[in-house]
Length: 431
Ligand SMILES: Cc1cc2nc3c(=O)[nH]c(=O)nc-3n(C[C@H](O)[C@H](O)[C@H](O)COP(=O)(O)OP(=O)(O)OC[C@H]3O[C@@H](n4cnc5c(N)ncnc54)[C@H](O)[C@@H]3O)c2cc1C
Image (cartoon, rainbow, N blue to C red):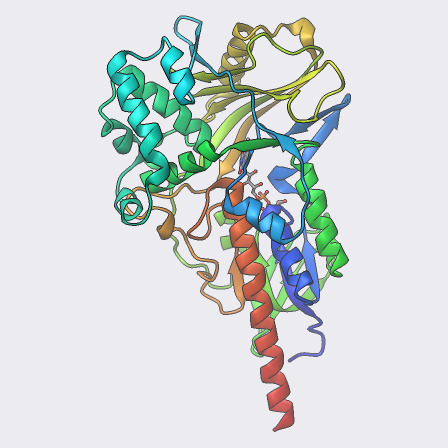
């Protein structure tokens, strides 16, 4: 092996996927370098404005998700609280708000569903947690929209299930996401989510600390511009400032396009549609009258993340308002403000606000026809020793769960590859 190759695992991109890959590899004793074009954290970074901690759009961690397990294996501590239980359904056409069912108790009280829908919905709530194994394999074939249509609900009832499905998956177009992923995510949602104290920055800081304690070096403001495979099986990664030599590489650059731009022999992955969102992040001087509302006739969301999580100064509130599927900026902004006003928020309440007109929540949703199992694997890169990680990679989890799970798997695989390389080298020298 070239003596200049002193990095065992080089990670490109310091979002959650790259940070986990680096933390796992460093904890396994590998020499690790992480290069990041901006600051660490990617889409999980939080910003503090006037004392309000704002995630980039609404972020909730699935308590029973694979991501929580990855974080606990790395010893990352986090605290937080579940969302408010009272959820309203919002009809944009009429400006109405009505209580939505999210549990057996609220199902009995809701005025949104008729008796027949209540029976179907109760059956759904009781059977959802039990779906597993072969029924998942069958569901990979169909879209979430087809699955909802098969439930026998009225159009109103289907609207309620669609609204809850969107909240759990962030998919704006339910015909473009496979039902296996959606049902697995709804099962996780039933087990609970939490809003994190200090925002998702607490995860970013925790992962950076684990990586650093294992000796990983983070190069910020440094873009990887090219990745070349060398004849001795190692890799050269170029940045505008330097050339780095590594035994293995994890590309966790966020999007499939960014990964493709770097891979020496980019494969033709079959990818699903991205999920985008328009987000209005608000820091308010008081808590709004209606704390949570989901759109019934439009793909809209509003939730008061603080109080609940510690994100706002005393007496204040952090509210996230979102449209699933971003369109023209002015149109979306006006629509989000209409929902905010309907929930009792006025201009006078606002201390700080930020509108993010088109965020990519997930770069490729699992496709109907192939489902979660059809996403590219961590080693589907066309080059041995180069791995990928992100929210569009691997057979488990959606959103951050997929980034964290694929990051962990890619970090481990990169260490194994680097160790094999070293062992082969030692064997050659000994001959
Ligand atoms: C509005 C919104 C709401 C969300 N809500 C939730 C939620 O409630 N629950 C949930 O589980 N998930 C949620 N997510 C998803 C979650 O934030 C992401 O899945 C996760 O943060 C993605 O991490 P990543 O590391 O895969 O990608 P990214 O965060 O995109 O990180 C990729 C990093 O690579 C860097 N990079 C790119 N190219 C290069 C290069 N050439 N050289 C060096 N660095 C490079 C980028 O700067 C970036 O920092 C949400 C996302 C959004 C946008």
